[in-house]
Image (tube, rainbow, N blue to C red):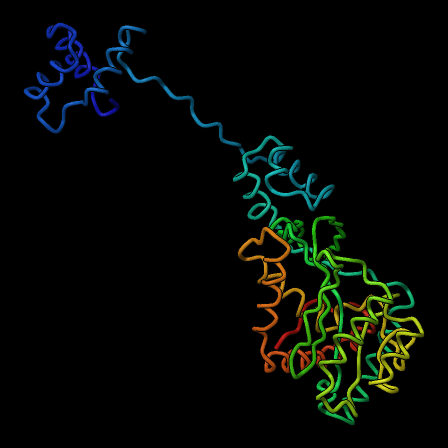
Length: 360
């Protein structure tokens, strides 16, 4: 009834009572006054009569004005103090804590305080001795690359990763507000249903995935015995047709990888060419930023396998198999070439973490 004036509404009520309080008769009678298409509907007439008989009033109720937040110096100071104390609090939670609307809080952060929302980098903290070990490894790699320009194609990189059934980390919630990127590190633990996947990546493609699981199909912890069984029963089968005379094998320093029995087993196919803790060349600890599986493969797979939101472990495993099979040897060649570039960046950073992903 908002488009009718108070005088028109009074006229409608008058016609209603003149027609024996019949909404239907009133509706027909209003055609003469308002026209066929401009008259109120029967529902509109009924609501107007009910309002008049209940309140004695035909005017529209005044809606309270929207409570807008006034951005003043005090409000700015409160938001700035909140960011200083808790830079990782989300905009929605911060607005609730400060009693401000979401839009006002966002405008203050983005426009008034000139802050930006940076993604949190998930990585491992380096220990004091790690920088020197990483520099030594970079120097060794650079020396090899000078002698063998295609050295990136002579290494088979390997690793395991967990894929949780309940999915991915929502990176949109991993933000913190600051004038400059502080490279914040976040550590989170998850204990849902999962699969444990092993893969090997080199310039000619990917070997895998191999799932560490028991007879019931449930994920199991990777220990030395299970790791060696995977090497003998699965990995060796994929190497039978390959010429491994100048090929190196890389693995990280996980305990299940580095026992004397395991290293001796690997040296059967890679004599004097094992890159690992306790191997022929020492792999630096906490160096996920320089292994292709961590800086490329796992992140890529986790961006793909959860797109259809798998509900069962079998669907998740099928998604992983399909995603791996779609990765071409050409892409693996580019990834390993990128690894060569990272060695120079690692040396230039004096063994520090690489700040971003350099991918060509």
